[in-house]
Image 1 (spheres, rainbow, N blue to C red):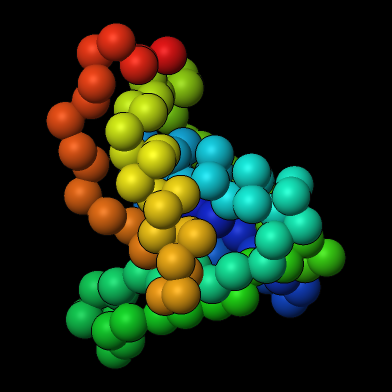
Image 2 (cartoon, rainbow, N blue to C red; image 1 turned 135 degrees about the vertical axis):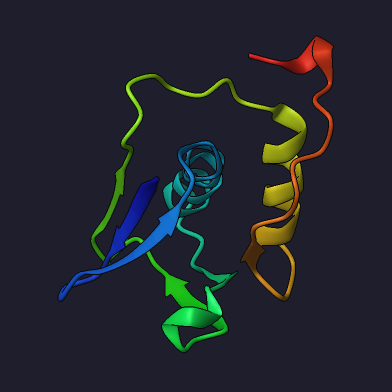
Length: 106
């Protein structure tokens, strides 16, 4: 289970390492371009929260922490689907992983 740690004071969001690896590609790409955007996710109802959103901006500290020892294989189709969401009016949301395009895996 990885963590996206954001802001000061810090606030952390738990994602599976594989999800976080794909989100990192999209988030870093958008922030490198100087594009601020929202990130939304669903929380476990046991924590008393349902849906959450934050505004991501390059001026706010951001850290990705992975607990697995190896980098997951990336699915280009998933990165593209996440990037399409990030570029939409609703902002970045975790979408289900599509079947990978075998010719595009890296």
